[in-house]
Length: 337
Image 1 (tube, one colour):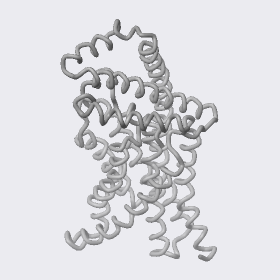
Image 2 (cartoon, one colour; image 1 turned 45 degrees about the horizontal axis):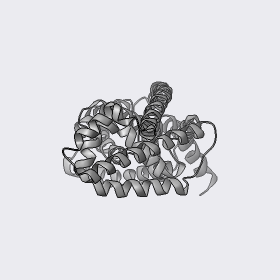
Image 3 (tube, rainbow, N blue to C red; image 1 turned 90 degrees about the vertical axis):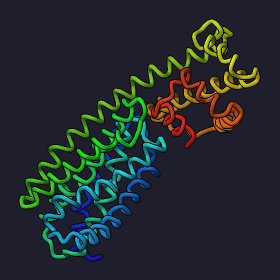
Image 4 (cartoon, rainbow, N blue to C red; image 1 turned 180 degrees about the horizontal axis):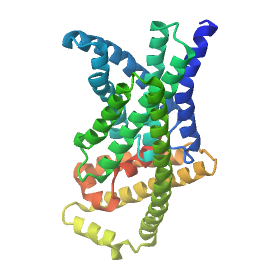
């Protein structure tokens, strides 16, 4: 690639890549591993290639001119496919807080922007530097920003729902589509669109990021105390006098004695792993990244055995004591990796 093509490529991609790097740098707990970020960026790139093929077919099928299509149809298609990556991350508990939601959402848009800008570089090789500045600070940043907003909104609504479902994703998706449409309506004023994109999305994402860090601090503090108290009750033999112990006593009428014992063992192992996960986050905040040891691996193997032993009915019976949420499942998934 010649120098006159390298420079536009750098200008078109540097802002969005830099902002993603900034988000990773300010993630004090290192919630998102670099390999996951790179994988999400790659997914965004694949989505961009898929969108190119779909958009071409939809334009031919609907008979729309390019401007109308880009303003009213393309945003819905592109945000739907980008959102699919985020939904997959949410459903597999790879996202647990607004911080990692912002990072992963922005990473999807970054991958999308990389491929889209590479396409435009090939399609319009003689475009001036001004065009690539606009694409870098405008279009590329927009793709990352609106998907990050979708990820954050979907996570918050999913946490608040009594029974999480795909319906929780609709408000964030609608907001992302509207913002994308609004940006595309400013195509006649590219410099204005670039300025609006950066001035609107960057402060918003930063504010959400700082709020997410505070919420994470609070969750770790409260969760650490609750887990430590539960483990102390189990170890001290005073569990029978607690609400949890009385609840386990009631379960004796529904389960055989050995199953009740396995339920207590499961509760202990689960709590130990939850404590280790929070401890690992605190170590990361202090600059130490400890690998998972053999003892942790053995705990996960024991947990898996106990899950098989007590069955689905037993796991449902334990829910009132485990207080399972997406965050709780996320922390175990983080520790497992």
